Length: 183
Image 1: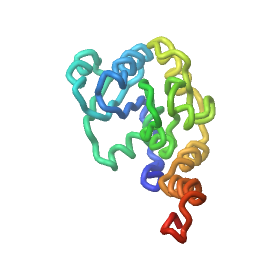
Image 2 (image 1 turned 90 degrees about the vertical axis):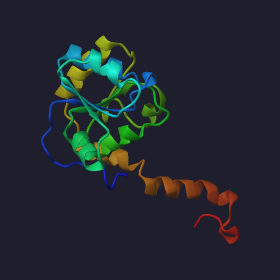
Image 3 (image 1 turned 180 degrees about the vertical axis):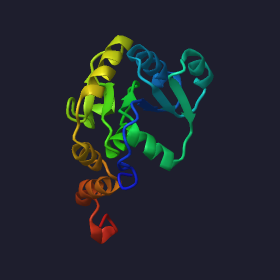
Image 4 (image 1 turned 90 degrees about the horizontal axis):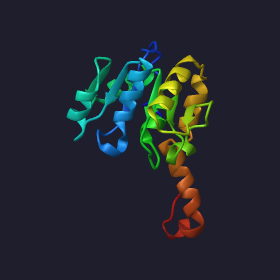
């Protein structure tokens, strides 16, 4: 929802944000280790079966926000220095939401993020999922300047309205309007 997720124009908070289910395949443990190594605060939004284990591994610079409401989520996206995705996603709605809020993305360059983030323009894509690589990338992305309108414009390419229009365009040849097809 790029209409809802938009910059709040609050100052950046100097923290990295992760929004994910706390399950092993999301690799939130790697995000924790990388942020600890980079000496950068981390805020984790989400809950799941791995939460207790992850909390034990985290230091005082890691805050577990749990499930948050949409206003708080928008505020966190808008004030984070970057959004970090350590797991491989088929698409990545949170990635688009972060961009819609004007926040660059740091992710492993695999899966759906390749369709969303252009390396160096909308964030950084790393080749290796290792802690050292991510820690160095966290340091680098925090020193970079990104064009807020460019980040937002990229997110708008994935808006619900645009998706609906494109889907109808694909279906139109196979489902004519005279037969109740897309209009």
